[in-house]
Length: 202
Image 1 (cartoon, one colour):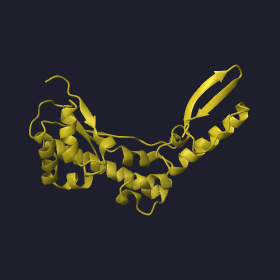
Image 2 (cartoon, rainbow, N blue to C red):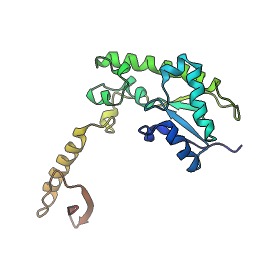
Image 3 (cartoon, one colour):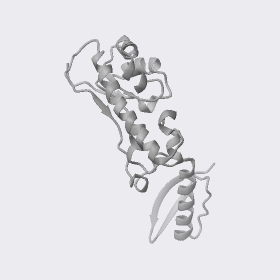
Image 4 (cartoon, rainbow, N blue to C red):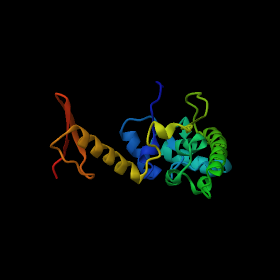
């Protein structure tokens, strides 16, 4: 077969795998890269139970799909991140625990080790070996400087902080435009030396 194209399922983790699999097939994908959240792939079950691994393959093969790896992005993010309350929303309870940062990082690292064993079991249970790809656990590493580069994990305060910043920007650069914290940004257009921010009319 030609090089297969697989879909990372993390963006659809709110859908059961039994619903997502036929949808992915209709979209033209050859397989799925199963996210380790939602009900798509449980690393603890897969590390211990071949029956669980076979149950994942049954769902995939029923729709003519394959897989070559799993994705453990959310737990991986916690390994090197500066842990705060945002991470509780994305981590399994077993990893979050009491929320103490170093404990969270240690449990996240152990979870990733479990994910490697789970992936090995999962791919060993594969009913057909069409391509000899090495088992792969995809994910984030986290970083102690990540929070300074990008707002992930997101928090409910991110939007408020962003709008406060835009408000200050607007007041500094325009004379006529009033900005409210609930008005989404429509455009940024240069006017000689001034910039006009236009809120969408409600």
